[in-house]
Structures are given as C-alpha cells and as structure tokens.
Length: 56
Image (cartoon, rainbow, N blue to C red):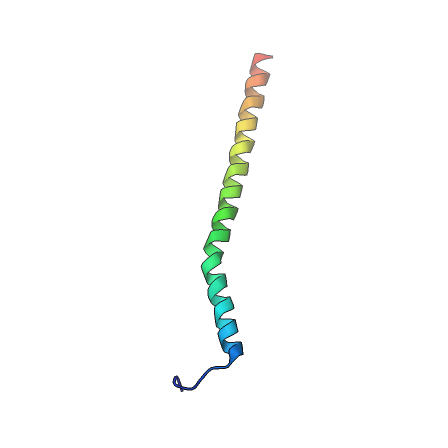
C-alpha cells in the first residue's frame, strides 16, 4: 500500500497541512506578543493616570 504512487491532490493537501502546522506557532506567538504589548500599555497608562490623580 505504501509503494503505490500518490495523486497530485494528495501531495497538495500534504503540503498545505504541513505549511499550516509549520506557521501556526508563529501566528500564535504574534498573537501572544500583541496581547502582552496591549496589557503592558494599559497598565502603564493606568499607572500614569493614578500618579496624575495623586498629584492633583
């Protein structure tokens, strides 16, 4: 069964699946980095706002 030649559709699907598996961690890392940056920006802005209220 493994020695039979495969069709072009099999190879296309295999390449697409391998591409998705290879790029998924990169996309996930970009999403995590974006969330981290947004949360950091929020708490930095909140800290500035609280300091402004303390001095007023």
